[in-house]
Every structure is written in structure tokens, then in C-alpha cells.
Length: 170
Image (tube, helix red, strand yellow):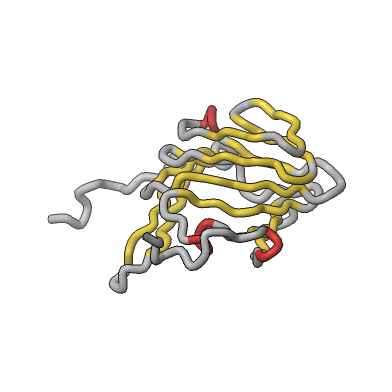
């Protein structure tokens, strides 16, 4: 029986449409959505292209979701917890859910593009922590009135708290 969500179960990476992504002078990438195009439901996957000297995302960890990266082209380094590791074509990188010791970030330290396949579980909600900036975020995919998933993202500093849980509840 064919899954009605899957228009086509195969996508060649030559067919990807890349969305440019940048923030300041440190973060820049092109992201090619794969999982959503194929109707994936429990895994998210995309092809990420990092130009020389760039990072796609801040150093972070997930408390719920697990990520895996497979290096397709180029070289660079991955920062995991307090360590840095050289990466190259053919490397598979595991980033399990956990605390700051599992925080990760891929950096293109070469003079050519770095391309990698990113795969992750898509459990919702998730808590992401950003050890460098001392922030955390609550990330969720929630159905709207039409039943389509919408993203909800709340990012704050770790020390921020509400004045009083009961404030305004009398």
C-alpha cells in the first residue's frame, strides 16, 4: 500500500532546491530540504552546504532529538562538547540527545565548500541549549486549526525566569 504522503519515495540531490541561510559574518549555509519533500514523518534530513570559514548554526545540544551528520564533500571540523575533531569525506558524526557535553557545531575550516547530509529525529517538543551564549530554547511542531504543523520556537537566556509563577493568576 502506497503512503499517500509520499509523492515519490526517491529524490536525487541534483533535484534539490537550496534555501540560503545567513546571519552576520560567521553563519552562512545553503539548506536543501529532503525529508519533507519525501513525506518523512519521524526523521528530518537535509543537505547542508557550508562555504569556507562558515558555520550553519550556533554551538548547541538537544535534550530530546538525536542528530547524525555524514560528510559528502570537503573537510572541516566538528566541535562536540569541549573537544574539536577534524572531519573529512566519508566521516559519520553522531550527536545523541543530552546536555552540554553533547553540544555540537560543524565548521568549514577549508578553502572549498563542505557538504553534509544532516539526519535527525523529529520528536516534539524539544529543548535546545546554547552553551556559548547561555541560552536555551523550547522548539515544537504543533498542528494548527487546519491540521498542518506549525513551528513554535521560544528562545531565552538561561538565567531568565518569570517573576512569580502565580503572578496574575488570582
